[in-house]
Length: 113
Image (cartoon, rainbow, N blue to C red; front, side, top):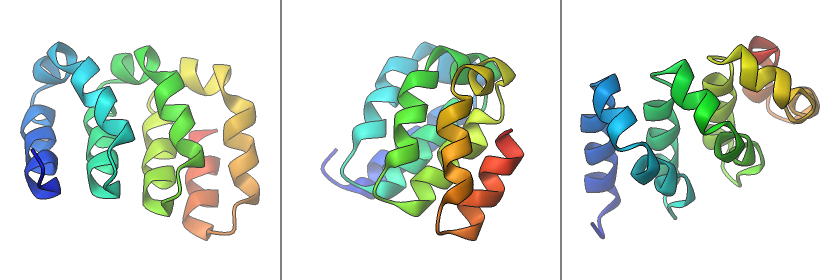
């Protein structure tokens, strides 16, 4: 849909069920590249409903640590914290966020580690 509110609502509806997130995981991952930060955050939040989905799509979530939006970076760190396997694999990228200018991002990085 061309309206970001509808895209956010659609992801939110899928996120109500881990089964739906698993079924539509690839479509949700594509929304990590959406032009609207709210949609990117919603997509990360949906994937974070399941540690298995975080592990499966860890590479895509880790890329969001460099997103232009602070809330997206924060959401990515919270999601990564759900999967110890992914944290172990991408620890260096998470550790770099300990130097971030935003206190919330630094705290989320600590929480992920």
